[in-house]
Amino acid sequence: MKDLNILLGVTGGIAAYKSAELCRLFVKAGARVQVVMSQAATEFITPLTFQTLSGRPVHVSMFGRVESGVEHIDLANSAELMVVAPATADYLARAATGRASDLISSVTLAFAKTVLAAPSMNTNMWNNPATVANLATLASRHGWHFVEPGAGELACGTSGAGRMAEPSEIFAAASALARRDMEGLRLLVTAGPTVEDIDPVRFISNRSTGKMGYAVARAAARRGAHVELVSGPVNLPHPAAVECISVRSALELEAEVRARASSCDAIVMTAAVADFRPAAIAPHKLKKAPGEDERTIALVRNPDILAGLGALYGEAKRPLLVGFAVETQDLLEAAKAKLAAKKAHLLVANLASDGFGGDTNRAQIIDRGGNARDTGKVSKDALADLICDSILEKLLG
Ligand SMILES: Cc1cc2nc3c(=O)[nH]c(=O)nc-3n(C[C@H](O)[C@H](O)[C@H](O)COP(=O)(O)O)c2cc1C
Image (cartoon, rainbow, N blue to C red; front, side):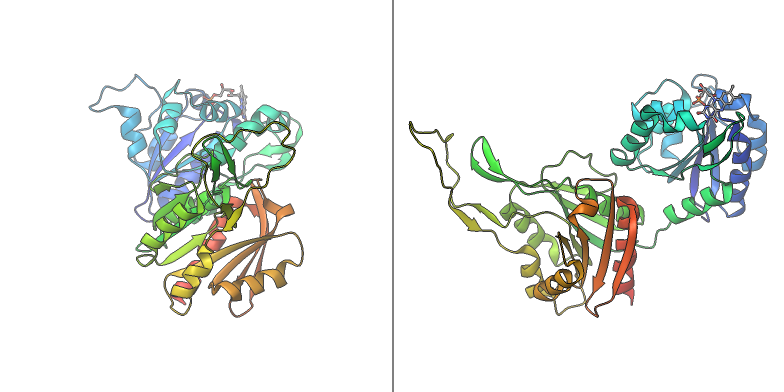
């Protein structure tokens, strides 16, 4: 935390008073804290409290201050981490829909780095499908991190989920996100499906969403690594501070990986690469012939990219090769066999039923010594950090 620039956002919930303690913890840890409050937050606690604790003027209004520069952009550019506590239901809705209707929302929209939010609200507000959807959007589309509220007695007199996490918990989550332990490392990550064209309008592909690979790329970049992300077509935004290379087919993906492999410290192969591709891509749209009841498309094998890298680098220490295996049964045995066959250094194995397409996963991270680390069911962001931990252990160990 020492010398880290933190934007502390405070919105209008009853838990706003707890943020004074959070501000104090950040300052005590050596961080430079700039507080931004929503107008509603000032009804609950005065800016003077935060100004005194942080040693800096607090920003509230979009138009109130006459200073040089554009305030909301300058604020957004001034920090490496934004922590919003408490995060009201309305603030989360504004952030999820890209609103910039007040200073804190504008700063949020302009902020391109790591965001940690600690929601706090009445249980029904928390369980409302609108809030649930807003959080899902912020997590999956924008890569936000959350310290979820606990259950307990709420200020509105009811009891249930919605009470803001304690300042010490939020501080611990922020500290974990502030790690820069991958600085100086170069990571190559592949993600998403490959698309194998049949003709100009048809293709063979698979259901990979790319979420896991994008989470690994985000986590490694946040922790200071230089990250190149080679991705098949997915419906995800480019992660901040990551060099993104778009590909379509397995052959394109292989070419991009091969061109970059030797300069990397680790290669994380999450892409779901098609095993086969059509033997030929028809130059024009294929037409059905009258009376044609069946059509056979000849397929040829795609290169096994991980095995190819294993043959080149499997005996070396770098680049560390990290493979992924999705199985439907006999997970550990299948994964250990794959790790040996491909000469990977680490293999992340999961059951299709545990993670495919969703936002959570449960995996075994297996090394060559046969050690398997069960991650338990975690978010893909948390799993990405665990994979980065294992990579660091192997590279530094
Ligand atoms: C006494 C009181 C307590 C409130 N507590 C919360 C809360 O804990 N969480 C929340 O989402 N909204 C809460 N609200 C409603 C918000 O203050 C309201 O939605 C406001 O518009 C939020 O503005 P902001 O997101 O700009 O801070 C509370 C309102 C009052 C009057």
